[in-house]
Length: 97
Image (cartoon, rainbow, N blue to C red; front, side):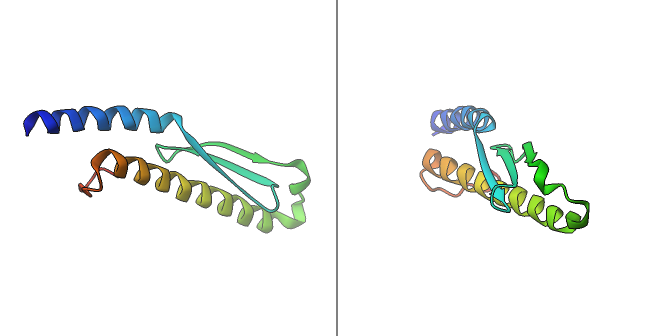
């Protein structure tokens, strides 16, 4: 049992490292804003097309940025949950995700 737990722990550490290198991305405003998030739930890139930078539409741009970032984060959480589920066999171990 201890060997299995040690292997699981090592596999989890490896998976977490791999997930840190994987990304998800989302866009908003018809592609005017693009957000990229890694498996560590970090925003690693944010692109805003120049045509979205209308000072009179600042609130709309803010909404697009929030939408893109939140969707990318949601996708990253889903990616992590799926990979952890595969590794743990759906055990649902608290604190892993």
